[in-house]
Structures are given as structure tokens and as C-alpha cells.
Image: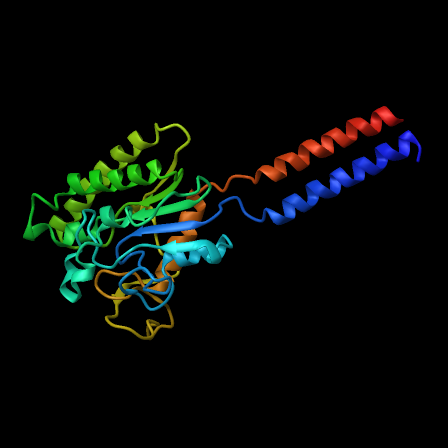
Length: 285
């Protein structure tokens, strides 16, 4: 085999290797983890959680499916969880669920791959329990604890976070809406500080900007079962405080518009490889 033919052979093998590496690296994120309350709890399908408070998949379920990560998706969220260590709702059902709040959940996992996508959504149950203990469940402290949970996960290796706030667009009670506004403002400040950590990417999702375009926001249905209204449109709510699965789909779609999916490193290698081959070809002429 001539020297020229050897160069061509090596070039072809190298190109094939790069192409195969791109095909096998189908996605930039390696896995998805979720922490929080009933807005993220998908039941006990993965051995963790309390119960699903919707009529179908929740928003993180949809994300895992859309990103092709259903086989590497673990949901640690518990319905009823506060941003603290406790879970008043879960504890009322079982002592084993009493300490499944957000700060307890983040202790359940060991090291986290830096390429994982981590969802942290909490604060709603602090708001619902505020009247019972204004000192423990005040909005500023709740936001700080969400930040503390993210900090714990950073120490465990996580680098990419989705952190939604609480939407008060359709809240009629002024006191509740005010609690959420203070929480959201405090959370944005907490996340701004965490974003200063080198290598950490935090996508703060402002749900007050989200409109469920295809949903009928004027009606609510309580309880399980179909939540398609008489007008044929899907309702936004599953009950008085939880989104329907159709609304969760909209949340997931909105989150995807806010989250940047990094290009796989192998794609960069492929482009570099092609550039190298082009240069080699010019030398061979």
C-alpha cells in the first residue's frame, strides 16, 4: 500500500470513528433528577415519592421523555414537601414520610454527574402552611432553603439546574399572591448568587410569564379522571392547587425554551476532524 493510500485509509477510519461517536452521544445531558413537592412528584414508579397529584405525567416526566432520558431519570420529589426537612401532608399519612421535605430529599442521593440536569421546585407548601407557623414558613426563608438545597447538590457534583418559581397570575387571594411575589423576588436573588459559582448553570424559570395558550383557564375540576371540559378543551387545573397533565405538558414545553442544551463534545470533535481531513486532502494533492 502506497503512502498516499495509507493516508486515505487512516482518514476514512478516523472519519468513521468521529461519526459513530456523534451517533452514540445522542444527548448532551446524561440524566435527569427531580426534587420538590407535588408539582414534581410522579408517584412511586421509581421507588421514591409519595403520590402523583395530577391526571397524568408531570412536567419533569415530559422533560425526561423529550430529552430521551427516561431510563436515567430519578424523581425524589414528595407531595406535601416543604422547602425545609419536613412534610406535614406526608407525615399525616405515614411517619416514614414526615421528614421528606426538600432539604431531606437532597440528602438521599450521593454523587451526581456534572452532566445531569437537576430540577428543584419547592415553596408552595411553605405558602400553604404559612398561617400555622409564620416564622418557619415565611417566603424569604423558604427561598433561602431552596438555594441551600441547590448548594448541597452542587457539593455533590451537580452543575445544571432548573429552578422554577411560583406563578401567582391567577391567584385571587391578595395575601397568597403577595407571599408568592416576595418568595419569587427572594428566590431570584438567591439564584443570582448561586450563578456566580464557577461551572454552575442555573435556569430560573419564571412561571409568572407562562400562559397556557391551549387551556381553558376559567374552569377547575377536582379529583381524578378526565379533565376535558364540555367545550372540548383541557382544563389547566387538576384541583384547586395542582396543574393538570395537559398544563404540565405546557410547563415542560416552556421550560425547554429556557434551558440551553449544550452541544455534545463529540460534535465539536467531528467538526474539528472534518477540518483536519480537509487540510490533509489539500496536502495530498
